[in-house]
Length: 279
Image (cartoon, rainbow, N blue to C red):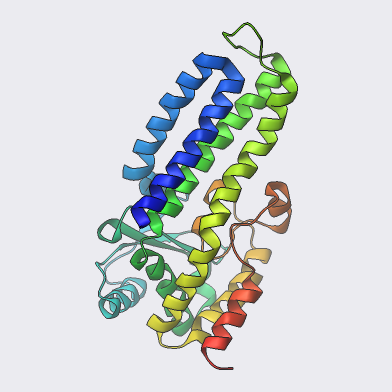
């Protein structure tokens, strides 16, 4: 089922890319977009995790570190393969998981997260990320992030094409108004696809993390701190990777720019966790 969802995701994103390519350059644009889509499919499956980790300058932690040992204990409890563990030097408290399957997974947390959470709260966050690994969400999220970045690139090309004129090989040249509309709407369409698959994933990962850590309030308390910490400590994060983090790394201003958030509200997530704790 997860592989089918990934296939559908790749298909929808590929269609968006081909549509943009056609508007930018007609048949030649379609061929170029098809090549880009094929390249993106290949890269997103095999290398997108490495790209995302490199994007945020994530560094592997020592096997003797407290963070590694905490992850190791939760992994043993969950009966999952041990993921690679990374630290991102950022004041913003946040975390994400990536990789194409549980055997090739990675968990990354920021230094800001380590500073404000106690061990119980940290176990809730790590449990959430291991939930994504267990539910095999990580490939879907990483593929969505990679495609969203490629679509944003094409949308920028469409915007410049509208300004300087189309380059179509058909008799009719690219419509500048259509190109401008695509430049605006295509990233939103990609974001909508991300939203469709991301919000349910977050609730399920919350539930998994709550159970794995042993107390839903551990994760609830962590989410409360993360919500405040993200607002106080902006991160230079790409909107295309927003869906990968446990809470959106974007500021309210950035969210207005992208119009949509891939995450359910933190308030609703915390309320569900309190319900799990029967409070």
